Amino acid sequence: MCYKWLKVLFIFCCLGWLPSQAQNTLAHLQVWQENSLILDIPLENPYWIVRWHHSVTGIEVSDYYRLDNGCMLLSATHTPAFDAGLGHIPGRGRLLSDEQHGYWIVDIDEVVKNNRYYLRVGSLKVNHRIIYEGQSYSLSELAEHERVEIRVSEAVCALP
Image 1 (cartoon, helix red, strand yellow):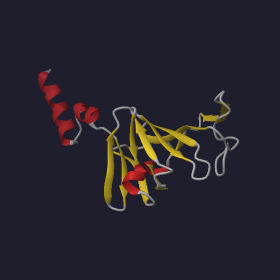
Image 2 (image 1 turned 135 degrees about the vertical axis):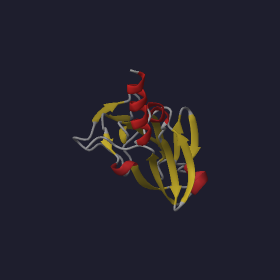
Image 3 (image 1 turned 30 degrees about the horizontal axis):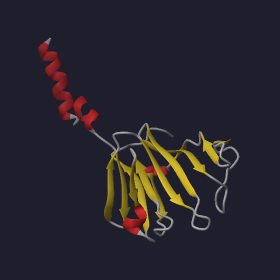
């Protein structure tokens, strides 16, 4: 009987997989500027926010993301008003009032292709930032007016 378990363990080792390794693989939310990693957040919690101030009106907009089945998903967005470039697209989530004259778009659950997207980071006035577990990471301080890639590493999307 002991021999059987040793054989199973040996096969897992040869395949490069052990249950403890699978549990210890942690996805990271990363921001890259060209070939330089400028922000790396281990995702112990699969939820984060990308927040900024609208470049014209200054309202604060929040996009809510989550990691689900190895996939980066845009889950919801919140805005106090539908200013230029903002709004709801029918069939893409549900539009709700935030009861303070603002709007939530919930149940978007849009898969971000290849777990990555590009963002032109705004000025310090716009202050693009990532909010994770209550801490704010200012992308505008790190890469003002630059194109960055926001991605999740160490995760393989299992959704179609």
